[in-house]
Image (cartoon, one colour):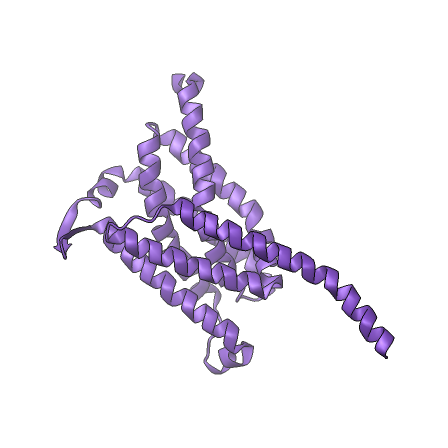
Length: 246
């Protein structure tokens, strides 16, 4: 246990924890949108199970490092690009995100009546299954990055557990906020489309720096926060004007 007194170990732990939380933003957004389609009474349970699956999948990937590293070995080439097992997972995951986000946007725009007619009501098992699939996609890259940043598996596991606990504490508030504001939900779905495109690009070795994506997300949310604040200020004025007209 001498590594516990090593400053470099603690620096790696803090770095990994922050990285896991940041990389978990897209996971929380996807989880919030899926869970929002469940009855209110089931949402908290679905969030807990979904994030628990994220933690378990990341830890299992860490414990199978030999298999994980084999995923980076080229399997075949397409148009001069070598494709590995990791690339296939990223491409399939990106396509899944594009499909799911597009369908959610379609449902949101068409309204609840179209969703009911189309048989689009969500089941608890279906939502948790989709969360489990996307957890593996989102976990793959973060775990591979973690392996490159730390030498001790104990440090990596501890960072993942702390990050998931933080996500569990914040997921409910984020989900409620997205549910209350339809424009935020549309922004979140747009972000997921952007992330899906980035995953597909990564699969074909066309790396899009995630800093650009997160900056676009942060800037868009900041603009929408200003819009929401302005809308709240206008509502009392509009109500007062209506009352005066009556």
